[in-house]
Length: 105
Image 1 (tube, helix red, strand yellow):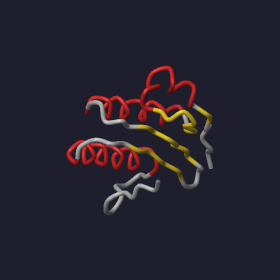
Image 2 (cartoon, helix red, strand yellow):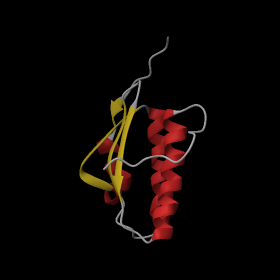
Image 3 (cartoon, helix red, strand yellow):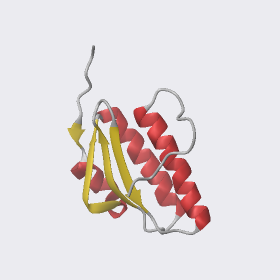
Image 4 (cartoon, helix red, strand yellow):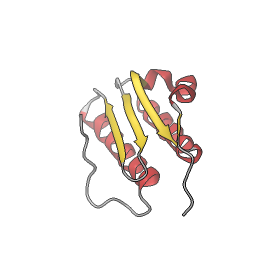
């Protein structure tokens, strides 16, 4: 079995998306995953000023932790939820997740 190289990518992500990360954010992913996360964060940023803050995105291999917060309008919140659902499917699952994702504060 081939194990992926997971690394703390938090500082790398702060260089491009600082305003979307909480002060104590933790991101531990592999190189392919960090590129996907950056793309999704850019799409979230395009929604507008919604106070989005990524707090944690960790691949435990197996399992994962993903925590975020935002304070937009109901339409903006729904747009973020759809992007987070996509992020979870792409980063952590090979098939689509059945049903809506659950946000755990």
